[in-house]
Length: 499
Ligand code: NAD
Image 1 (cartoon, protein in one colour):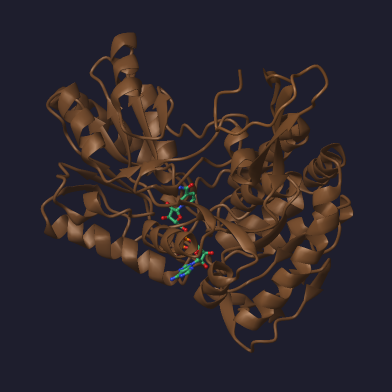
Image 2: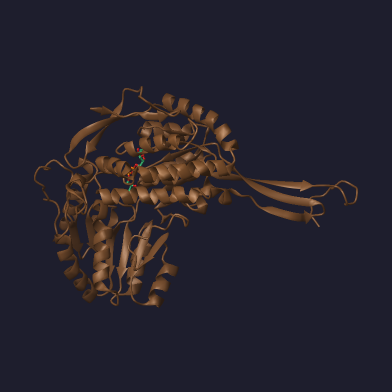
């Protein structure tokens, strides 16, 4: 069986802990590789090396650092097929979806090619007699990225590209379920000219994450994963004096107004609800039609579309719509939640629990599942299911639909489908959610904007990528300088205004 490595000081390095985690082929249920789980001692040694490497990297001028990103971007493009295969092999998503995963990460690398512009400071000329002020953005030092399984390329790239371009060294701890893409990206970065030790990929579980959080050299932690872990990591990182931004789970609502184009809304719901088997933090998991007529019209359109979905392994070709879930536990959890929906009185319109595929009987597949008449007290509404399950909650009015969305503890993404500009504008203005789509179901902002949820979907300050990322990964220093030529003699005694 394949034994994966860490990537330390520019080389693949075997783990020494003797502890491993299994990596499955989610389509067959077989273990295909094992990944080493690092210890605290291994982590501390890697951080010390990263700190050494950061000194020269942080002193390299920003344009040269950006040039590494240019070469890195070109290498990602050249290796798109290989990267997509690595993503699909461990995650199970289809190849077109895996290419999208790489592409949305690559777009952040592309923004980093112009990063010197975002790393500039500010200047005030003549802020007082003979006094000028300037500020500069300096790297933090060693920072950490801790990432989830569901975007094995995109989210590590969201973390590493801005952090490295800003002059930091990064310890990347990818998901132990899908680490191979990060290991290969580290190889590509070396080929692009990144000095050894500036990006260290350390594999592991809670033990290594805790070691990162407690290591005094690590200055900042960028985390993406489930809400309970995000909250835990935020608390521990912050109490250790680190800068932390921790992005969590989601329960994204899509409101469908009676004036919406129902076919377009149904198409959008099927893609956003079932794409990637629902394992996206921006998946739509709750459809909220306004009025029974709208709700009935939607169900009428959703059912035939759902029946046409092709579920299978990524190797079965590009016409597969979605693949298996990540683990057997994930599959059993999702099926258990579907059971609870039935027990708690929701109407099961399509049932994916008994889905089986010949030749893949042990795969972690769940068929597309649709519930109608879901109410906020049910577990299928309260839990982030993270599977191919769409719940329809009927609302009597726009205000009721808006209140439902706003009362939900998560606030990652949301969408409204309507033909009415006033309603759309009102929704975008009032809703307490970080990313809003208007006739757009998965509103992941482009890479020169910025990504982040509200409420229990994010803990800490500043968003991922875009200008916020450069603020997060740098600290500001402000210099006040006075030159005495032309100003009257005598020392300043009092703290006073500079005029
Ligand atoms: P997860 O929280 O289980 O794991 C995320 C990372 O935390 C992994 O690297 C894992 O090794 C580590 N981890 C897990 N348990 C830990 C513990 N007890 N202590 C310390 N570290 C621990 O999340 P996941 O299952 O890999 O990913 C799915 C979740 O991520 C979903 O909730 C999804 O909504 C969320 N997500 C959020 C965003 C966003 O930007 N808001 C994006 C993608 C995914």
